[in-house]
Length: 407
Image 1 (cartoon, rainbow, N blue to C red):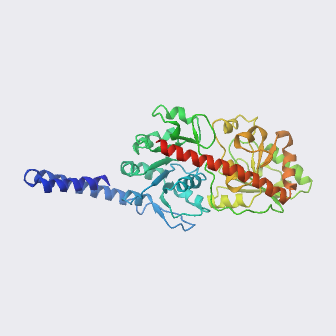
Image 2: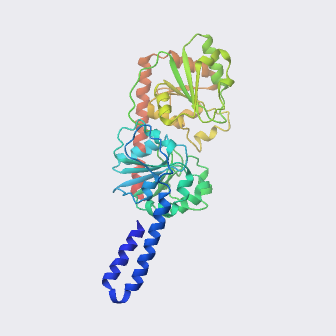
């Protein structure tokens, strides 16, 4: 892009100063042609390298090669860049906020995140640029940095100090229209050694001091469903979590001949059928490392989401002080009432009107109440949850608008 501008500048000099500058400009022109040729040659290596699994047949799916080969950037366009293979449950939500504010959205994402847009209603303002490995980005930072500066705003969806060199190489730290999402607030200390960000540039999913809360929980067109005849609980298995009270509750409720299922998904298979007794294996369905479209289907077909944060587990305390559990995004976006410990409920705007709140001592009673809840009262609970979700959405949208206007 910049190289082409230099080329035009040299030609203009030739026309104005033929007698004095012809030889110099001619040499400059030859050098530029060589540079363009080398750049194109290097970029074209990507053309056949990157593979895209577009199982949902989205229309505007491209590879990193396309954005590097001078693909035009529309006016009023925001770029979302996710440098990791996770957190793509957040990407549709961030995208929706920008679209609601009148922007087009380009997304540089790993191939595995594409299906996170499985339910997105309108893809007409979105372009996807896919990479297969972070090395695809690192090898072309020189060229990408010249492209990123042309966007109205750039959102780095996951901040990690280990990628500071990459952010710097992409010039993201020197342009004042960048936003950074901190999923771990403790990373700010390490990040601040290199650059100081104002509050409008520091985004978090939760309501934390000195950060701007932007909670992305939009997934697409979610149809309201009645409560299943056989109650389905959804839970994400996470490393370091404890499952004893869940297993004990399932065993007790099984003895009461209650019909229910617990759907377990996640990347960390620390909780499997080997952790449960033979008599309750029919009550558990384990599905690990599924795609985002499969994840959405499992959530949508469930009735409740268990957020098994334990105030006695030191590893869980951070999920109300410096982090936000991704399960809360699913609760808001799919309108599935949560089953959550009282010590964490307030932080996530959950209460007895929109969810089931428990103490560790009465978790079994809470699951039983959820199973026995009739659809009429279930729909009332969902309505209350919808009000909460809409309020969070409005506040987040307002915050995005404020951040854009202040930069």
